[in-house]
Image (cartoon, rainbow, N blue to C red; front, side):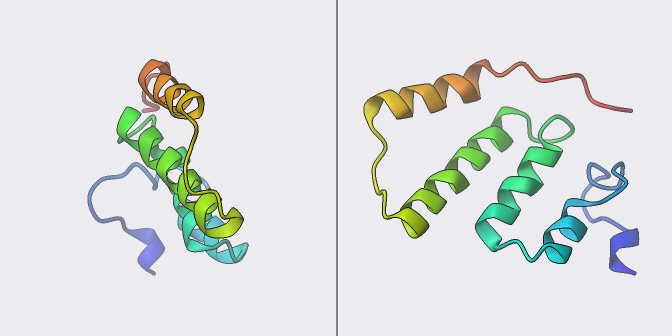
Length: 93
């Protein structure tokens, strides 16, 4: 089975349920699925970069599903602060 191996690391295999399994079984769309994927892996792989990807996918949902095309300056600043100041837990071995 493809879920028994992982290309490019082991940051998903450490979980009882891999993000892709959860996403497929629950019929979650592409944008929300990527949020789940990055939220699951950020402490083990991408760190702040993965948090920024989560924010980007949230912005895409706001744009495509709710018609919101621009964040206010306060919202942008809050998102940047969240991404830059987030304290990451140590990786799970």
